[in-house]
Image (cartoon, rainbow, N blue to C red; front, side):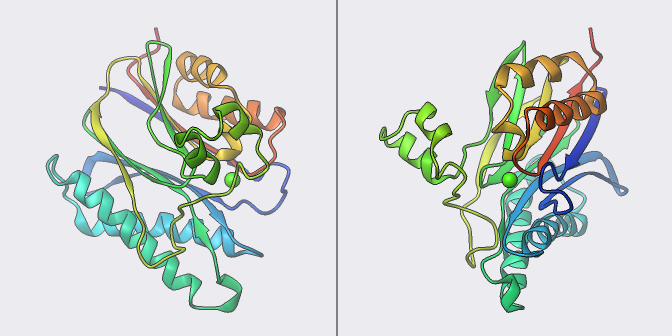
Length: 249
Ligand code: CA
């Protein structure tokens, strides 16, 4: 199936410092494999930027050495790539006092032919938009979302909570990390996949994401989603990748 892929990232109101890092890449030795990553770094001074860059590099480099991939081994390799990135960010955080406590979210997707796999740590999200319905494919690893799961907060209270951005899991903070792996799925004609940092999903309603992702090809949808988030207005670095499967009708 024909895929169109677009990506956009902006520092938003925090001019100059974009702690998000994104990647949409293919591999020369296996061109039918597409790797997508959104990483949102945290840490003082330049640490957040460096953490998310290390996360992206760690995943890409691991997979580059692992290629060629096959359908059976993709989930293991994607998981291990994130684990390798965790180790890389953790090692970086120990390399200098100014990097102490750095970390990053990551949502990463591998697409091979029409099948896709997702791994995530933190609160960057992946959505599938199919038949104008929005399906969130990842779980936010935030303190407030854990309270929602326990029934102590409603989703509305969580969204408004002063601790809504506090992560309870992030890449590179500890020596090992628990990684969420979504079940693989097959793309259908007309599907859109959206990966984004919280700078986007905390200011745009799902219906807006659905409407834009359903109406444009990947590059246009990514650009328009970014512009809408910035106008919302965004309160944070904002990043998005959009994959559009098949032709627009
Ligand atoms: Ca963020």
